Image (tube, rainbow, N blue to C red):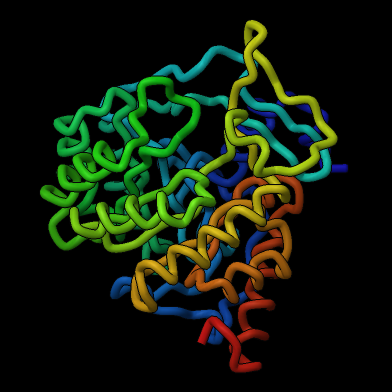
Length: 334
């Protein structure tokens, strides 16, 4: 058992972030050239990324590079600091399952930008593709423009996170998403803008969303965000009790039961958007075999977070071995 799992989840997360930031975590083996890939004009050292939420303030980027990640999506960051939802708001449910109700806590745009600026001169900058997840829980296009204007020059891509299930005010409609994407694209310049989508198994609904944000200037997709209680039927039969706050089910699920939905979304988005749109699979990846499934479905790369919590850094190497094996066999990824 991981000793960190004896601690409350948020305490364990803070200790992990401290260790990574101060280079106390393991160092990855040398890069294998066979894991490199090109995506939206950038060279990734490997296809394994750290999902948004793990490093909300972009505080430990050099450490994540040393750990072996090919890319890191820092954030989600908002224009002004947010406390997030009241605690407890993060639950380990065993067997690879987590429910989080964090509510986008972060220290705001100014500190985020300071950390990104500092990282520009770090030796690890050349090894790490840096994405920045941005959001406005109040659905303010002015806030999104402000975020994009100062963060885009320091990042390799931006992700608009309008799909977080833990923010009550978020408008998840296709119209709202299109407006927010338009606002971000207007300030992002040459920095590509990606969209993180909520879990959606209805292909017609998904198609409307994908087509609308592509028209607004989006360059790629991350699928998928966590599954809220309102869509818990996507998880099938569960062996855990869903967390509650004041008698109401809260939070979004991440873990192995999410993989089926992620696979479906990756396949559908690839079919809708075509072969050349960058597509990152996120959700349910806890082994190289899981990642292989998403690569086969059409993902160019994958992101992990819950899998890292339960499996540790060896998961990065496991996925990279799978990726290389698929390439050698002439299977996707080509």
